[in-house]
Length: 419
Image 1 (cartoon, rainbow, N blue to C red):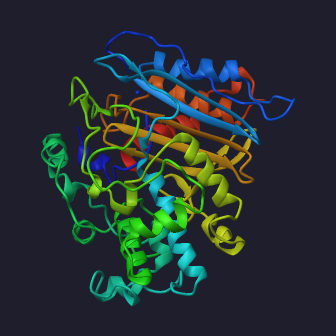
Image 2 (image 1 turned 45 degrees about the horizontal axis):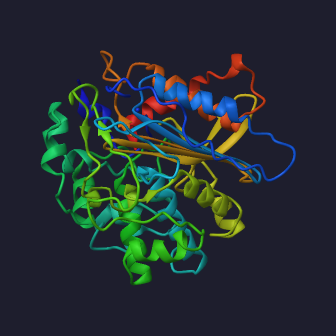
């Protein structure tokens, strides 16, 4: 199944089914209109979210904003064994959306003069990245994935290289230090020369970024991000976990791994030290919209930093900046954000540059697709349904015939493997 080839990384987007064959309508349409002119098409949003569940996703929930208007909804099951419904306020592991949080922390230190974007990372972490690599790889290259450093995922979960999921269960309660993850990434084959474009997405870059943040601030990265990013953005249900358990209401998180796990296995209890500052954040869809609104609105970093963050290069098929990427939707405009996928949980969050139009969506079934002869996920109705909901949320004037957006659908399938 060429799993090793698929996996440059594993922390990325999302997608979900129900074996209980209990089709739940979209629950909790809790949108509140803040003005007389309503631009959110609530029935269409509700129907498109139901379509994701009907296509095979176990449970899916979403938050949409247009200016001061807000809609939230959920469809399907949080627990397929009991039929417990998913609700819009549930916590979710958001995977590589964590990278935006970490990048914000780094940029705050750039603004304070403690970090220089184009300085060699070896200037700050000489023992972690010694020699030529430490001299050639800059902080910017870490944040935009042009460092050429390989990913640590196959080192952390070695059975995946043999097409087996045994490591996923065996390492469920393993606690692994960030420096060990970096060692695995540095030992992996390099993906290119430092600074070479296109870049190659690697979780190792953002584990190094977390250690860099600790070095210059003198505090744990999680503690810094909690105070200077999460609290400053006004997020109420977002945190970096210290245990394998999620605090507060959350769905069970089911991993299929392209049919190797049948039935899909529940990984909602999992030690997330393997994801570190590359992908361990827990949040809600409403908090994610609030976070990106705060970031793009200049509440977390200044204009010069935002300009740096939104300067993109091609990376693994994405237009990637510093911890954030852009996606152009045909006839609708450019949107900014990230997605994330961990075992059993997927999330995507996108915002217009002015932060007025937003969507964040979470799902609790991952890698439900079959693989083709080249080891790539085959198209699945869930992918089309999620793309349709995202486009419906971000592009309210799009005609029904224009809802199927090939680039977004392809991106959703890619993200199952990549981050």
